[in-house]
Image 1 (cartoon, one colour):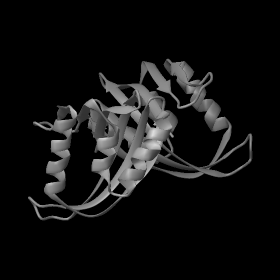
Image 2: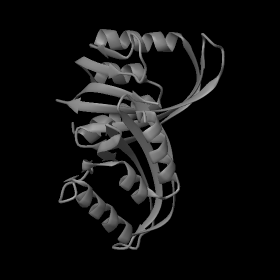
Image 3: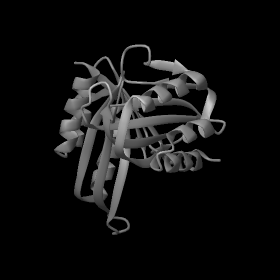
Image 4: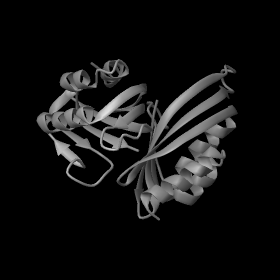
Length: 117
Length: 117
């Protein structure tokens, strides 16, 4: 699969809310996930660690809706633009989030994901 | 200035259509500009070369309108999401473009810009 084909398939799963499935299918074993924050979740490596972060997020947020735009492709990278209508359970305050996810592909797998917000 | 401050100032100029001024103010002398296409404009280095590309683009496109969303920040990088309503003079066909610009900051300047579409 080309980077664009992987990007299209990844985006299609995200658009259907199937983020976990996108990860299972496309994360490399040594996937690195980089958040724009300090703390223990700033940089995680490996499918188990990144899946644990995703599971934590899903368990701690109520998602009311969202959109995934893209993919936008350049070389071995692609970007997605996420909008999310969400209530973090910790605060109970419903909010709109918007962020850019930047993905790097190698040998048909996503080896890095980096989130900008 | 922090990366976020630079990103905000850069985005504000783009939102006002002052892209050239954003470049003049924030491009590093050895700025690298990477497009998602083959050919002579795929990778350019240096302010003069990148400015020449921008000038070519402006001279060959009629811009009817556009938006700049962001910035979205992570570490020394930031992303902008551009929408553009434009007619390339070569084709005369009005079209909507949407792309993500990814910028890397070092020592208060943009050292790399990379466009995804």
